[in-house]
Length: 234
Image (cartoon, rainbow, N blue to C red):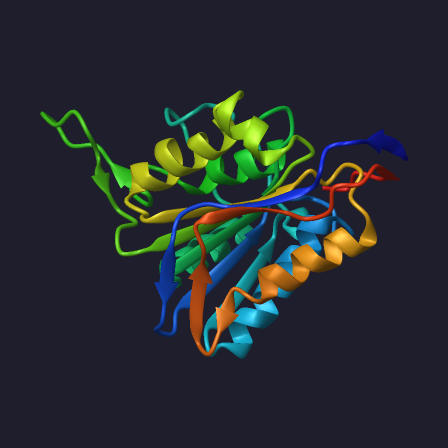
């Protein structure tokens, strides 16, 4: 699909952090397609992390076999499929989680939501206790990164839409289970971006690891500002 798009593609990088020690990193690709730009970002991030001395495991949700529907909520939790049991084991192994996903209809993809519904269960990710309003956070001691693609300009998603999908992941999912700090990187607009823009974004994602350290700079950078046509494959 080719559509005109006039906004300047922007890589929006929020927060500052340097990770100078080796991490056990679990990368979770939330886009179901292996040919998406998210997949390319995941591959670049994974290779850069390995080159920097980090241990890395990767989960591509589109390749896992599981029912994404939590049919009866927590009243009668269905048995976990082998791929989900393995995913839980990987999460417990990891000290740093990286979620790579597109923003669709303002939020996260249905497959990724179903994955989280199925594995972030009571007794694994959190646990309520009698007399306490808030649960125990069972995944403490882990940090996370969100690498997010979107067709909306990142500044518009942040200031006008108020980042509902990112808020869902950061505040009401990961931090709820004790995972913090959580840093967010937004790449976009993907719609209308040229191969040169995407190559530059991949280079920037790969450049996050330098001499064994992970640098995320607090800034927003415009990448290209001319009128062009392109396709959207978040």
